[in-house]
Length: 340
Image (cartoon, rainbow, N blue to C red; front, top):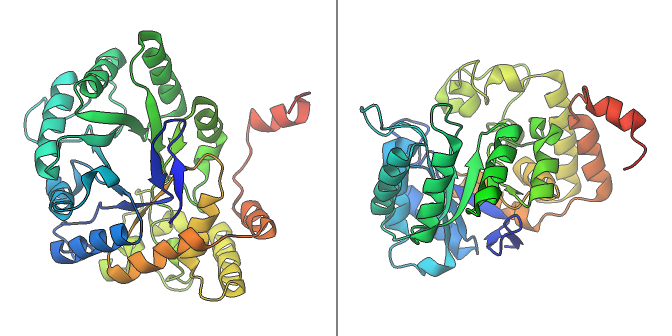
């Protein structure tokens, strides 16, 4: 396992982070607790040091499983991330990024995780009701109190991240060091704004959905539309979801998958998933890739990406096939800019 600097912070995280969203869910697509504990143990044994969860994953059950898995481990050798913003109860204040909800949620997360500190706390999504200053002051107070070490952001618009960084800098508050955003060979939308923003501001990108909702694992074929959860994430995701068959089954994406197939054959023993993850690890703004593993077999396969190095020619091929539409003002700036 390789380790990387998280943004411009001094924290080192393993290049592959373990996502735990489906641990403990009450559904056929979830990972039962016993196997989830084995997956976490194996991940740590292989040198992984970054575990990602959220207070809303499986209604808090994911945090409980992670907390149980970490008992008896060297806690100071593990970087633990969770999130705040989602609905955690029936009350009107059981959601959002108010000081009230942040403080209550963090206290509950610490109990479930059986720890006294969260290494990386993400705000999970923008809250249009709560003043941004209220949110950021609450986060800084948690840092000052020693309950949180670093803060990150997830699913914000680019201008919202930049505004938050400006407010934090103006007040001398802790600033975001990580951005967890959807990013994969079949979803490169963030490259229009976020990649440059994060490189400029020292915020490490932590991609979620790096396998495009399992599309990039190679389990699907154009002629067969998956119709059930037994056929993977694309079998149960409704059309409006980010990771759905309707979004993934395009000519562009099948061409990307064909190139992934060829590259995997050129690297004996490499799987489709490893090629897709290795491409992300080659992107300069990425600090660590957050992958999910439903089974031990999937975990072992994904971990192999840490050792796979794609050639410049292979990266260029994948870049070209998966390129997103340039659009305005980017094409105009490229044509008329006199400086790089």
